[in-house]
Image (cartoon, rainbow, N blue to C red; front, top):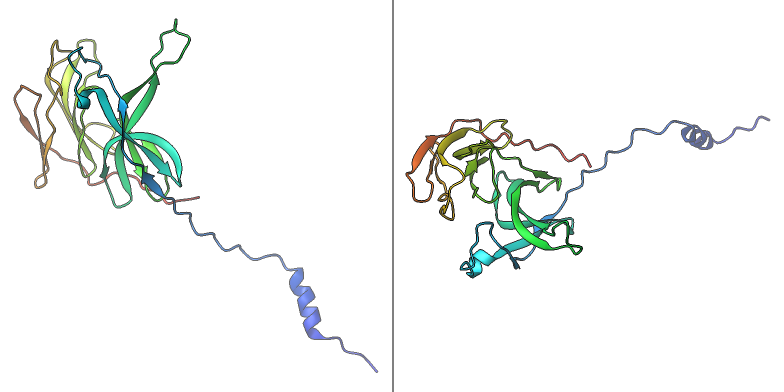
Length: 230
């Protein structure tokens, strides 16, 4: 009499030799971006005089920037939400101010450039704003536009009214508003820019000078927010 083998055993063996199917795609990792508490650090402005001893001129209020609980940068001042997932914040730099003849490092704090931070990916991008000068430029943000006074990188130099848009290669506004450098100039060099929504306009004024209003024409939000591929 012929003996029949159990079919489930054969099916099980057959399944074992089949190539594996496509792996289930892992869910993208969501990162956590946070800012620590403010603390004050010593600061000496480049144009400071011996009489400049006020608390505001001799200190900076900085706080740490964390991604997944790992500190990535030191930041300065308030952040600006560009979109619902990205923001800009100014970087605080700790520089070695020691001369070549000094054997010991001399660390000082200085205001630095601006950063663009993606809350979802945790990616941090250094922004290269046109004609930006860390000692002159106080940026006022609106949407993805930055308005500030800049310094032209020329031999004679000029003080400029600048409006830059994130993602743009050139400044949206770039107008000469004075000479630079200036002896005994005002601090701050320019007043905070004043924005208008409809139509989009910005008013800028060098301290002690005449204000001017500029129409701002550009695309809405050229910020590239890529998918998280981690």
